[in-house]
Image (cartoon, rainbow, N blue to C red):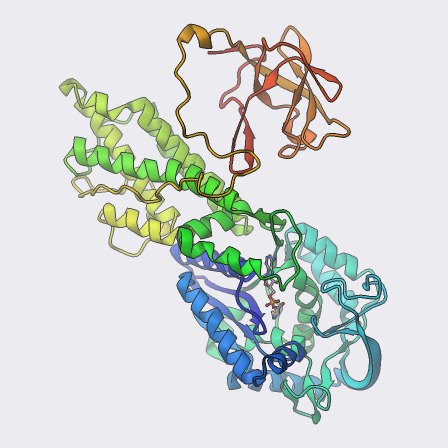
Length: 629
Ligand code: ME8
């Protein structure tokens, strides 16, 4: 059994939990659950960061003691994680004795080793961030994060000799390309390290700040909150020498948001090196959630409201949305329209329908039991092969914390199985006794598909995955090792499972820019009316944005014999480079029209829902010009 240790940031207790905190914690939980089904011995740590100016000031403002504020908000974080079903193994608070003890032991060891000295420091300080800012970082004389004025502070403090580790750290990062990942953050860190690294002020005079861990070698000072906080990752395991530490620390990985890369990628490795503790394995950095496209600072209340969607739509839907929507490492936008769009399309339609159709077919046509095999044809083999590929793709994606990719792969498989239902048509097979063997093969394939989905979905949709497994009578602990084709015993009972993710009426949510999903019936048309529309496959040869237009791309497409210009309203969803080389479908006999001064000869077909847009492409290669009927 491989040990696996994963941590979230420990959150400040001056505020309530919000969407951003929830995202980091859900990401860590999904990874922990994945590693558990994969058979690893997992330890998931989260907790709260309770010392420092920020908390002291918030408490003073609220008229309570810092400890009372910490108690209240730490409990609020814990309650939120319980409500979200976060499967943490430990919850650390930096005001706990077990933490203080390890912080003081490390400080004393560094002091004894001459790694810490007393010096004078003057600088521009932000109370919100709890840190000094360099001239280079300051924006218009203000804190670049909070946009509030900085305070000049000069004082005697203790310093950690961080500067001497600069060369060593650059070397470590260069030798371990995925120490900080995704790569953009590694580059950012190497960028910081191109400037000289200064020593780190690790104390605050007590006359200015009482709320911290006293330095063991000078009780006139408390520990700088970042020096205190980072050590939580080690103190929660009991510190060096503790069996739990010895077991898990060599496998440590951290999850953080991009705002706290510097302390984690620079201070923390230097601190560990100086203390003679091995470094963590990976720092996994994610981007920021924005709301309605606006950049948000840390303390905006509507992030709290965004988190409330978990009550409105359920934990699984919430987890799915955040894990699928955010490309790990990049920023993403949260909106109710996008949320409902994904819920309806991916969860209600694709997955929910599949589970309902497949279980209903097995109950109605197979007497509620997995049949005796049936002979396997290429159609059944294709489903089994698609799954084997998806399982491998999910493993590769999860190795890199690419949750969005893992989910996209699983949904490819859901699509494969849905199409298999459409093409195998078990209801038609059931009408012909001579086709019993085909029917058995189809029902077995559906049962197998749901069984493996009931395992693969555990990290992402824990509640739905359990319902699927229960409907299939799978009561043991889910294990990835069992997600292999052909393990379902013939005769196993299957129950009908419908309404796994009820569809949300998106008319009730505010209209999305792309318009709500069209559910109202449009009048039916005759086949010859449809025949008037000439649809053809077109290969995009070149694409460029139209100056002055945010929405339009000018495409040069090939229809085999001829080339033409088509203007498409897809610029907000596709960069020119993303669309060039794709084979799309166009309405080829549309009258020419001028758009922003460019003549367009045709229209590119695209589907849209909840602010998302996808251009129609072919799922198998055909030459440009091919007619679409
Ligand atoms: O920085 N989008 O705590 P904190 C995505 N106590 N994630 C976000 C986010 C957003 N808009 N806003 C916050 C601290 N986060 C320190 C950490 S660790 C030793 C000490 C998430 O309460 C993200 O993970 O300000 C970010 O790094 C963290 O919350 C900051 O939480």
